[in-house]
Amino acid sequence: MEISVTMNGTARTADVEPRMLLAHVIREEFGLTGTHVGCDTTSCGACTVLLDGSPVKSCTMFGVQADGHEVTTVEGLAGADGLHPVQVAFQEEHGLQCGYCTPGMMLVGAALLERNPDPTDDDIRWAISGNICRCTGYMNIVKAIQTAAKAKAAAPAAATA
Amino acid sequence: MLPSRFDYHRASSVEEALSLLDDYGEDAKVLAGGQSLIPLMKLRFVSPGHLIDIDPIPGLDGIEEREGSLALGALVRHNQLASSEIITNGYPTLAAAAPQIADPIVRNLGTIGGSLAHADPAGDLGSVMLSMGANVVLRSSSGERVVPIGEFLVDTFTTSITPNELLTEIRIPTPPPRSGGSYLKLERKVGDFATVAVAVTLSLQDGTVGSAGIALTGVGLKNIEAAEAAASLHGTAPTDEAFAEAGRLAAAASNPVTDVRGTDTYKRHMVEVYTRRGLATASAMAAG
Image 1 (spheres, helix red, strand yellow):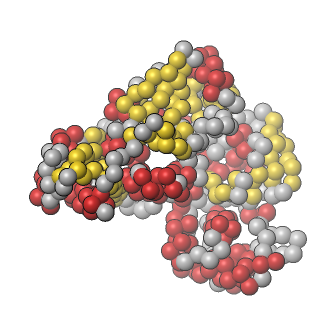
Image 2 (spheres, each protein chain N blue to C red; image 1 turned 90 degrees about the horizontal axis):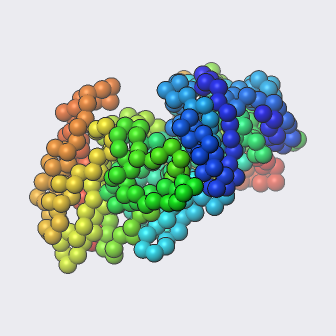
Image 3 (cartoon, each protein chain N blue to C red; image 1 turned 180 degrees about the vertical axis):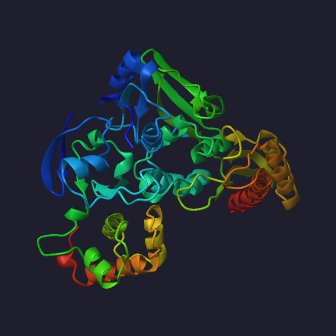
């Protein structure tokens, strides 16, 4: 079945079997391997992408359901003017260890800051509660999203999502 | 993990979905948010030949009060429930449960209709609906029927829906003034199935309990309505003693099994504790 998806701002089409999961469409049809498949059971959030701006688990959605929608993966976070504030902050705060959960964490963080530019630590912990970091590096992930919020507030013109 | 092959049908209206169900119903599953169905298909616990995607149907995601009830479209997502002012202000049991369903990412896609039709005994919304006396609207090409939630939820993963019917709406009677509600859920971590959860809805009338509904999650083959526990409260003063007795009756109505989440004894005890606590919370809310 032919689907049309706006992938990271670019119109893309693919011919996919209906049973193909969105995660596989993204990785295998579009070649964007930043989206990781972790547990494959809707538990870990490593495969999180943004569907029309909201986080969804791409292992629990068929590619055909994304037809006509906008999908943002970690590759789509950076803008023409460089890395997204969340990406910069994950680097600065050492918000990752092995990096496997990082794309999902960053997308959830970016979506949270769109909705809530000044989150408390509790807001951040709530937002990432569907994402598991098996290195258990949560402290720095929360710190990174806080740092990104402050960076966005300080330079709102440079903030892209 | 890939599911077995299926034919995918996208419905753009309820009528189109009903016509597809007439054609394929016996070998079809309805896809809404997919957050329960897709995991089951990936594990090949279900392998429908046809998938009828109702997610694109416009107008099935309404939240409105109508004729003494709250009418919820089948495609209302859990995060919509959690952020609705109508629900926060008037339907405290549902408001308490919605932010505890699965995790925040799953709640962006998961729907109320899908969750109820899935009929998982560990599902949160079934208990909420039992405690509030909700009805579901089932449509088919030959008409419509309104079914009390207690008759809809038949057994584990089993409802009284027929293969050509679509669950289109959930109707929750608007609680009277001086009502309260609570949903207490014990889970090992966010996103895990409930070890135990208890839904309580209660209203006060002239200083006594006017009506009460109590339902249990994860402690039986389906969501359990603890009718005897609720009936014990009718017309009594909302005291700790009355709530403790209702807690004991609710525990007696539960039928938990020992598993990785805890022993049957522990779960039964938690039903008692959560029923008691939930009633106290709901009663304090109702007393306002």
